[in-house]
Image 1 (tube, rainbow, N blue to C red):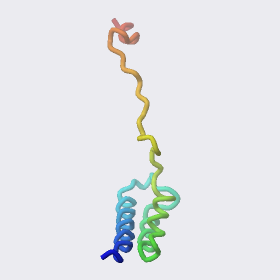
Image 2: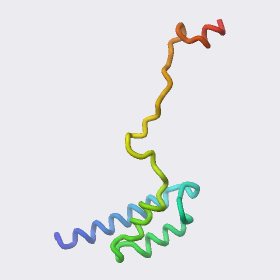
Image 3: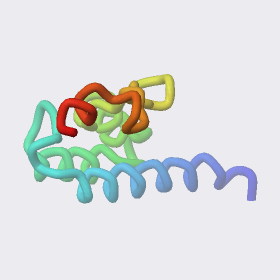
Image 4: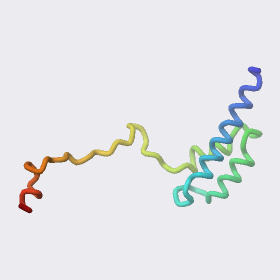
Length: 90
């Protein structure tokens, strides 16, 4: 069973990349059209040590927010009695 583990991992990576590419909006895909990435993932999938899916993860996937959790700095919410804009309208 242990000798099949690398093959299972390669197929898993290929399926994951294929599904992720198919679900990504066309405008967010980088460097190739969406159909081109699907073709690359299928042709260079597990039989070539997952070069197609790795290429998708490196060069085709939309850029994420990066490290740090992607939290946006929010403006401090003021109560109405401290908010100058609210007090102007009274």
